[in-house]
Length: 249
Image (cartoon, rainbow, N blue to C red; front, side, top):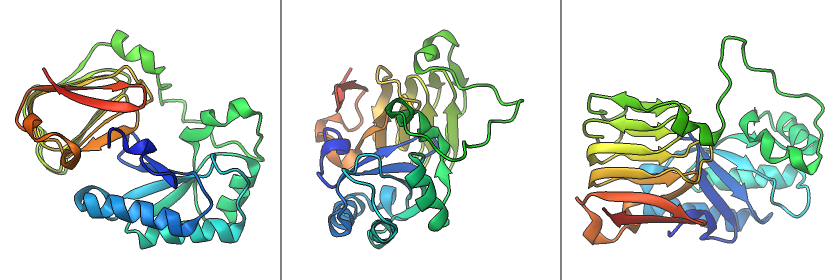
């Protein structure tokens, strides 16, 4: 996709900073959701088969009932993904999560609070020893996190609140994540997720492009969607509105 987040009228799919995808349901239609997600899994099974997802119900026109949400969850499973939680929302969503024995992902709370919705119980506060997450635009002021070794398959490197600089290669099956921009001074064969806390101004740079997936502020593209002339080239990735652009340096 130019950006997969707007490619289908049934749902939007975005990646978060811990590799869990958020499926924003746009219509209360389990069959349409199953078809939309199954298409993603078919196109890139190495990325989406059995991927953990959070179901976001905030964009439905009306509050769904228990049976509606159960059907949507079944549709996600039938498409080959694994629903693990509901996105934090209204008191109605909280009640649904309890009834369906699912957790709520509290990091989505800020997206709902401006609408004035209230909930019966707020999520527990972070432990006192845990520093507060900086605002997205703070990444440029904290200095970069430098990782001198190659990032091996199955390994994840996360730069919280700052840019990430990888001095070597990122192997297939590896994941590099940053709240700011990502710079890879080698080949990028795994996943790179920049602007993980929502910074749409973040960028991704690499010297040799073979990425399985690149994402900025949740908008993503997979290698199968890239022009062939970008393979192995030095590239940069950035957002233009909702479109994720990948171009040669």
